[in-house]
Image (cartoon, rainbow, N blue to C red; front, side):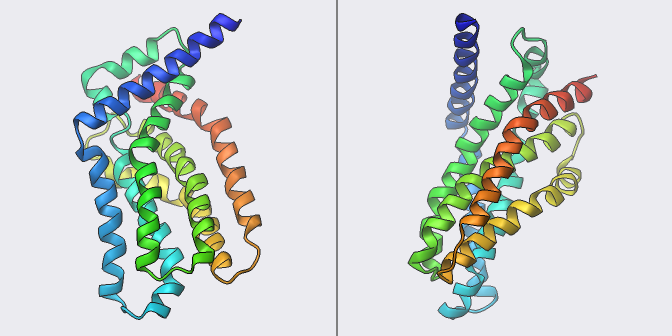
Length: 229
């Protein structure tokens, strides 16, 4: 039993390290979502108003919508390259549980795309004149929300992995499922900016993340098997 558990952990870490190493060989996989996040947030002051107080009110929504779109931009790459070179079929036929393998790929996807967004958000929050009291809520909400979005998005990516030009269909499937994360994440930052209690929104984001960790691996594995048949 212990040996089997150690084998699963070793396999999980091997998949994560492999995907991260491949991403660092193709740095565009890391830079594109991050640059998109920066550019999208930076355009709002130019398009709406540079007034600091006005931007402060819009900052929670701007940051979260940009983070959602940046995450969506990178979703198509979770399984696409493995599908093209045949590695995905080997993962499905592996003796290890497919749910463990796919959650490892989602974790590596978050490390490549979600974690940089979390780090960049600090500077963008300052640019949007976000109050200091809201920074903790922003970071914590993104820390809980972006992994959940990666797992939800991976379900859609698995369903559409065999389709050409699946980006629009993927967006139509996934964006409605992102709405609760977007609402609670934005609401947490707004409450913190107004110096009111924002713990409730964080608890709800944590509940969504736990639900995703529980159900998403099996949903992703099932979707991949359907797509490959």
